[in-house]
Image 1: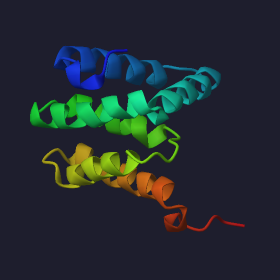
Image 2: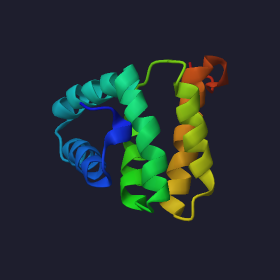
Image 3: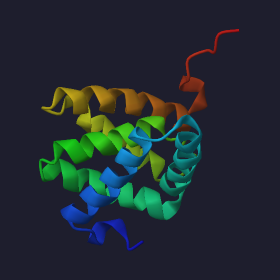
Image 4: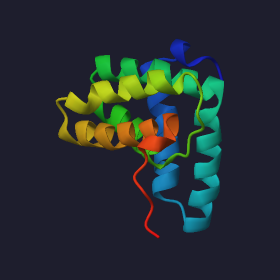
Length: 128
């Protein structure tokens, strides 16, 4: 894939929408397998760079649906800790006050999850 910063809004919308629709309509077995692939891509330096480029672009372009789809994909993804993950967390945290309530609420949940990846001591205790 080309670097995310060079993508047009139409390309971003196609890529994110394709992943989102695929996972939304997938069977349980397909969902797990596909989510693993998305998580690997999003945790890869290139995938993370794309997400870092796309979120500001979708936000400034008032593309609330695409922004929400990115956040929902991130909510389910299992990301690995990378240095750039903190920048992604900062971008997502900035969306917690977004005018669209769904975007704001989803950003709040994703921020908590990203913080737990960045610093596992922030994770709530697991029930015994």
